Image (cartoon, rainbow, N blue to C red; front, side, top):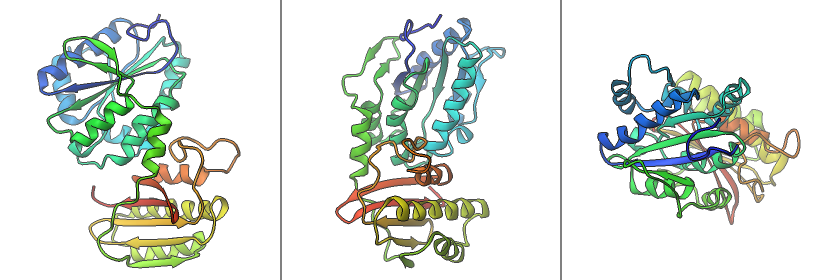
Length: 313
């Protein structure tokens, strides 16, 4: 039988805990883990190194929780959704009444840009909606920027407090509205003019140009970037509208934008979740999100732009 605030339901329970010191963090985290293990529920921990260390010291050595490396569990927002869904399905298929997950979603306090993870926090309300999973997302207010905290309150239907109280979140916003609003945000301004502009390139032409101009990247990162851009260019030709333009900036980071004159996808979850409706529509965006560490979508008067960034956060 499922335990906790979602007992008696089969739906996803997405909860945020905002804490201002280590004691407040442990006051939320320790009971969550201990009660899950006592109930025989698979209980997973995907925390940043510091929080993981605090929790390890507070739990007995034989606690039995499953510890997940944060960097492996959250390589990109879309990959994290895919991996979690596979893990949840496997555990629930083996007979678990509920899966519990406590984790830190990446943000600037962990050295990672937030925009993609804001989309993640909104999208998982839909992606996991029918799964009996209880996830507790912990945000340390000492290192979490105010805009991130605002985004957290918009995307978590439930809140947990250090004193043990739990409540519905009156500030939560419909996930699709959050995603659509994010797509209306223009791409960030880049430092100076692009070093390369391609007009009407084929996917192959874009690949060759990127290999020549972005050779300074780590080999694996370069391969992922080239494949991601190729998928987006192909998607622009198949599902967008000409003209198609590719621009590239190199420096401390490598940034590529692919713009077409179309309106972009009608599905607000495009790229984060597998394509639906046909075998190919939106597949390129989903593949790009699997490969690119930082991918964002922007819809504006000039058309639809996919921005892919690689290199240091």
